[in-house]
Image (cartoon, rainbow, N blue to C red; front, side, top):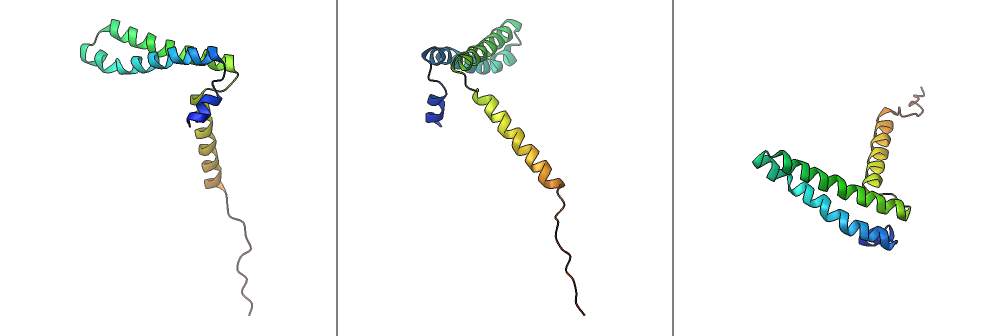
Length: 102
């Protein structure tokens, strides 16, 4: 998993953007309970700005690298599994009926 991450972040600029973006995204998520306790619109705005800003930095890094973000890869894999399961459930088994010879 780590090797895959390193392979998708070869450009030093992308790596730097991720070093800035990942902590911001995580901090934004961690501030949501603080907002819930205080019900402060300013805390919510700050948390949202950190979260979205962190994601924007990471997506910019992937644009520089020319690679697909892990979130997009995960969504595509989930969607493909979902479609395959739906297709499999709709298939009618085809076979020859058991013929009785008398």
